[in-house]
Image (cartoon, rainbow, N blue to C red; front, side, top):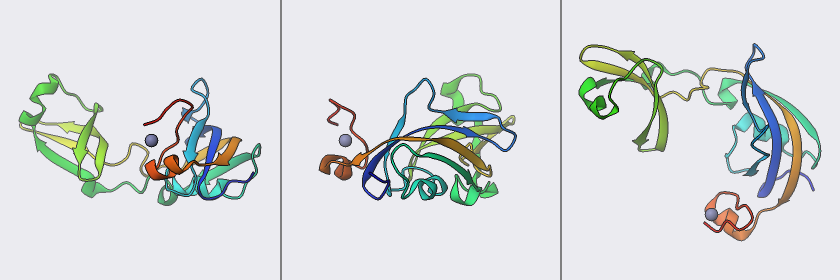
Length: 159
Ligand code: ZN
C-alpha cells in the first residue's frame, strides 16, 4: 500500500539540524503514526512521503517555509512580570504552555526585566531547516472514527 490521503502512516525517523545535531527521533519511543493529508506533519515532510511505498526509506530537507515557519519578531510579547507570580522564579529559556485562540502553544521566556517579561510565541523550531531521515514502517486505511476525530487510534484506544 502506498502513502496517500486518509491513510494511517507509521514512520521511524530522526530529525537533525543543519549542523547534524539530533533534534528529535522515534528511537526508543516507537514509530510515529499519523493520518496523511491532514496537515498533521510539517508540509515539507508530508510532501516527501506522499506516494511512497510501505517499507521505503526517505530523506527530506525541509525549509522553514515548509516546516515550522520563519522566525517572526511580531510574536515576541511583553507581559507584566506580575502574571508569572505563580511560577515562582523565572529565567530566560524557560518554556511554558499558554492557552491562545489557536489552542495550546509553547512559549519561551526571552528576557526577564524588573517589571516585565518578554515571551516568544514562535515555534521552537521556527526559522530552522529540518533534515528528516527514516523509514515508512506501516501504511493502512484510516477508520471512519479516526478520520472523524482527526487522529490515530492505537489498539484499544477509543477516545
Ligand atoms: Zn479519537
